Length: 557
Image 1: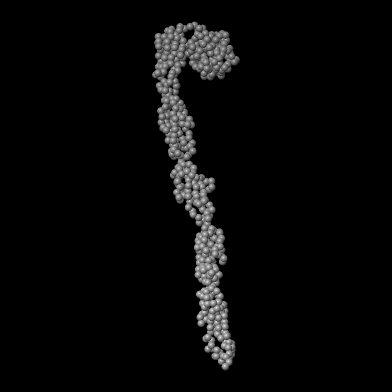
Image 2 (image 1 turned 60 degrees about the horizontal axis):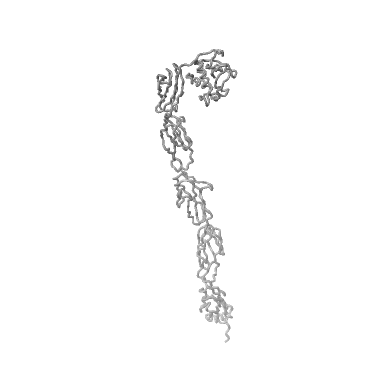
């Protein structure tokens, strides 16, 4: 009997001739027979033989197969699974790889600054594993960081998020921290050249701007003051002004600093003066001083001193007060609008007595007068002067200083006020002839030729005017005259204006616009002895000097 090959009726097929596995993967060979003949008897004959299909592995360390065609990858490498029956054979090629057990990154955390870029590398374990899927990356927050298909990171805004890596059903992750470095700090709301001025006791809350605003750096600020005596500042930037003057505040954060200038002022709230009342004697002085409230004020002081009555007291710019006269007056101190005053009560004590003459010669039976005054004239004491005569038999004196020559001799008249006294020695002689009197007056006056003319002057040596000269010359012989020319003309006996009627000792007067303004003593020979302004002082000239004619002539003895 001839046996025909089975293949004459059937062909052997498998589902796939190539498999790529991970170790541990399995698959069914998926074989099947395909009819190749139309002779049914051949199919029937071979049908019983299909069950004898045999599977073998070329390398059972890589892949094994059981009798039913169940294939399992057991090791790394290549193997061929053969399915055979009779002369029908099919080969299945198996490539087996080590599967990945874990996927992740080289680092668990990455740190970047805003705007930076970096590459991260996926790590598969075990190291010899082969992944079938493409490795993919994903950022869980793309505003913080983005990642492309190659693991290239680009840092966005500060924060942290996860970056995932996945393939073959494996997932790994890493934390990416994005930081924004600080570039500067500044005091908020304060111009570069601004000075913060505070009153002592005030507070000021400082705040800080950070650059950039979203910096992730440590924002701890350390505050320091250039002069701790001026104030204090707490860790939150609250400044309290406790002292006075300028101070620099420095804020430091890491390597960055900013400064601001402050000035703590102490306003003036008042003043105090060293005394508010004072008794003084002329011409004493007193020193006024003051202190400010508070004493350490920083205010620029505008100080002024003023006397409300400069006839009583004067005050200089330093507060030195000097008594000028008797009475009561206030010194007013003004400092920046604050006022204090001191009331001064000034007494002017008598320091002496002046008497009009210290020596006089009088004729028996004549009357005269002495004048005395206390020094200073503006004393606040009683000015009453007591008059006495050492010998009332020669000269008497009344309470007003009026004297009467009674008999020849010499005595002293005293003008007294308390411990002070002024004296006048009076010599009384029998009345001489008019010519003797005239010669004595003229001789007396000639001693002062050349004395300068001084309007209102009374000094026969230092300076004297016309009427003062005639008054003192006549007084040397005990003849009292008024002080001015226009009052002297009202004394004595009128004499003709004809010079032939004049005699020595007569007074010659001159007028202008109907008013007497000048007087001189006639000395005979058409000349007068006078103190003339136009001549520079005491001199002898013609009676009609400067082309002036006399307006009056008077005789006194």
